[in-house]
Image (cartoon, rainbow, N blue to C red):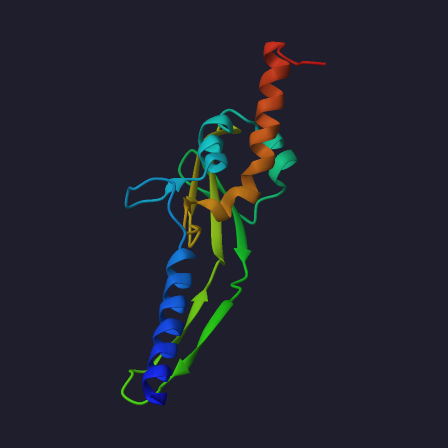
Length: 167
């Protein structure tokens, strides 16, 4: 009698724990194998082109490193996101003939991003990203903080040049 009640209780606990773990999974934005590129970093690839060196210093600050690349300069902005931990521990249950159930889940959201900006004749020609800079749902998402100010800056400059400023 008692052992069947314990087995039933363990089965209920295992089913509840399993269903809560499955329900907490994150569904991607689409069904492709690769996550989508972050919207801000994708916009920076297009909207920053043409900004002057002074413009980039205004919106992103001074680069961490620079390199000459045969007729062009490459500015690198390095950003490190400390790895944090989210630990979820499921207690180990072992009762009689029921197998042991337990374990843990560890999520590391950190990483690093090197935003690389190619300058030709003093203006942005290309923006690229390198490093451990993806999040579970977006590529290059850890690079957003480097370029988000520049995307807004480039949009404001474009509005001023075209006279589309709303007051």
